[in-house]
Length: 248
Ligand code: PGA
View 1: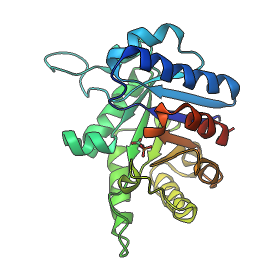
View 2: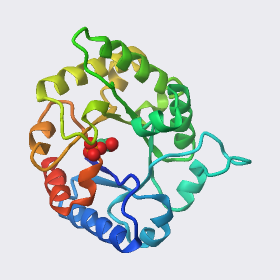
View 3: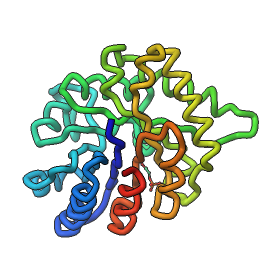
View 4: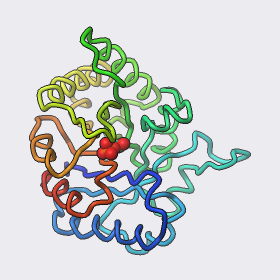
């Protein structure tokens, strides 16, 4: 399986010219490293201007509705995302959980509806705090189990997980390699509990939280890391280059 470098643009940039430049950088380094699957998640209003020339980058949405159609103002359905060329969708990002009150149940529904439409959901989860008492372990377990509740055994190989500790997102405070390694073991154990060992081994787990050019190599070398979900560095070509190269 190819490692994944997924770039979440969030609410940036503000204009199409810059959006095209950002995608150009993602494409350039994706072409230089065909052994890495580069995934790019621009703001939806820019997608029509980008889609004609996105290859070999996989187009990704930053969110999806839990509904198929109907009276749901402001939302995009999984079928609509597929229709405009998306093959991935981020679900349950901590910013959506915090700003829009998304629950594990909603996240699981979003992942399920994405799978039904042939999209690969990138399911995000992560603790807000790494307390000395280890309460984050219970929180991670509960969050992951809840977010996977509607994902069948058969579909478990079609999802991608993104472990993103909230305290590391956008702060520059990345996780240590030891802590990442032990957390990946915990995640793997939870997956074995739910899906059994054979299926659990097939689930790709990305790390997200202040992945930059200076720490990508050491984080990529942690056993069990299948790639990265990157926020801020998505808009910086030199960082994009180093992050993709670290996974090659
Ligand atoms: P960051 O964001 O790389 O800016 O920390 C990661 C994310 O929110 O996915």
